Image (tube, rainbow, N blue to C red):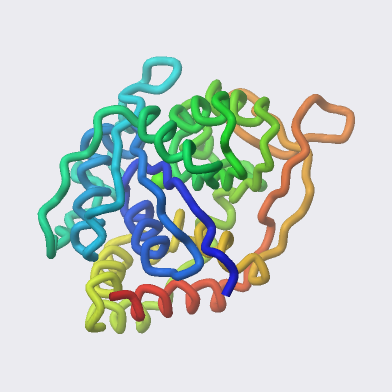
Length: 286
Ligand SMILES: [Ca+2]
């Protein structure tokens, strides 16, 4: 098999960020160099702690976790109002650590610099882009998969871009190889209830935890984890070169004549194949 892709996961853990961590650490096709948290679904400290707890639950406590930005570029704190993630970020699911939970590092940029001293990383941006804008400005990023933006305009702006639109602009302006994984795909790839139940009773801790998280997730969406499956199995997805721009608080496609950035956008997926790749990985992890 080809060399695994070395990834830094930037997250606001978050049920589906937890699913992304579970998949990324389970698949042999990715090497998780580190996890950085940012303010978003929950405070940066809750997000970092949740990430470290998920790693400890699947016997991967050695993956470094760091806390990044505590507020967005414009000074916003964590998401307000009720969400599926709940105040604890994990929808009330409690991971059972099999090893001690490591205290997260306090400086995500320091972690980024340490990781990239060994060569560039691929950044999986699963959260508002406040940290990723800083990474992009430093270089040493091989590629970004950006979970955010919208093809069909949503009622409310899609959260990851809407929470820090200035950071989204900065990421696009860095002109790094970027693939946008929009909310349309985020919501479209869902796990059938029978498979959710099967994962919950599977022997592997990663599968059990994934099943518990999917069980409480709205419509059993794979969410952020789908973008990680895109990295490992691009053949299950359809990608379209598209001109996109940040308009107000939304990242949306714009016309040829308008100012914007030409990026790859994931526009379609073979949902059952994506779900199967996810389930296979978490069930075979040990
Ligand atoms: Ca997220």
